Length: 495
Ligand SMILES: [Zn+2]
Image 1 (cartoon, rainbow, N blue to C red):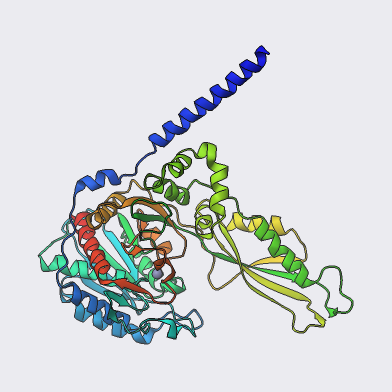
Image 2 (spheres, rainbow, N blue to C red):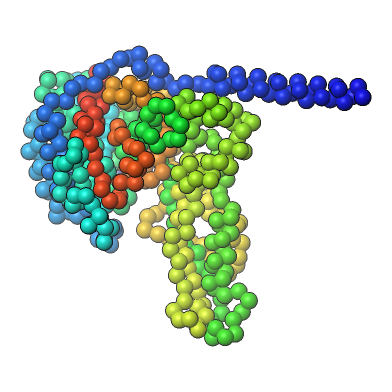
């Protein structure tokens, strides 16, 4: 009997030790640098004439600079109009900064700092927008290119992605110039014109130009993340994610072959069947998930704003990791944070119900998490499909790109951006983040010490559905905060 008592004591002892470790880890869960930044106490400057700034953004929205795709080049005939509007809107910018057009329609501004030994800061955004999905025009509360100002909002395509960031950056510089501010560190503004189709013309050419001039930025800031308010279940504070990396992009084409012929005498596996099996295998065998990297950092970073149980799980991934991964994998938004995603998007095969197609094809789109690469994903796909009758080749509209190398949180840019966030929202919890979609920054990594992604738009769960979709809009008050954020960031990063 004694051994049973001893075993029971041992089990109780182990459980107690585990509980102590779990609680200790929860208690000392690292709080991100925002605690310090709040103490920096930088106040957002009041934005004078915000209604006029809103009208300027509205005017920019009314010029549809649409990127349709490679076969149909960017809406170039409209860029000169947008440039004229920008020139008329920001006279001091155009008097004091060097302005260059690159690759016809991209804009590059240089605001020379007094100390040329300092690396410049690079602020980027894009002028082009995505088209309106045919048939959805009528669903907009205000027409998509009306730039309507109503109910406290500016409405239209580009108010969230990404003319608000172009115009707010310029508003920030114009206001600093108006008060006679002179930067010590050079500020460079770069606004591409084809981001929505990959930036292969605009951002790419800007990077080449900066490279030939041997310009290397201390850090850069681009679109890609926002302030989430009421998005993360249970969060007690708004969460401001600063993106450290953007995921990679690759489309693979699968082609299954089989003998054609009459459908009355089919072989056991047709081309359609083989293709279907290959796709099902890919869905059943996802790329492995990981809590390391910016996706996991983002989740851990949110923990201080979450209820105790969530904090405890996040603080003890050594114990709860597998459970947590299972949970996160269940929802598309969190699944995308922790792994390379697999999305079959196009399928083709067959022309007639009684004819066996001799081939069937499918496109599968992958978004690579940092840590995976074009090569590791291809190897995974080949291993999982393992069918000599199914070939795998690169396809799709873009050449594949790997995820960008995560920016170092110790780069001064992270803290400066964090302080500027707290200047407009002292209660925000600042966390690192991972950008799910592609941006122009994949090009800028070559000329920047760290590429960060952030714009202080306040997103609730509904707002997440607006960019690239119906009823894109930004509140005038929030637009004022974005301008204010840029005034602070430009000042603190250049003094
Ligand atoms: Zn964008």
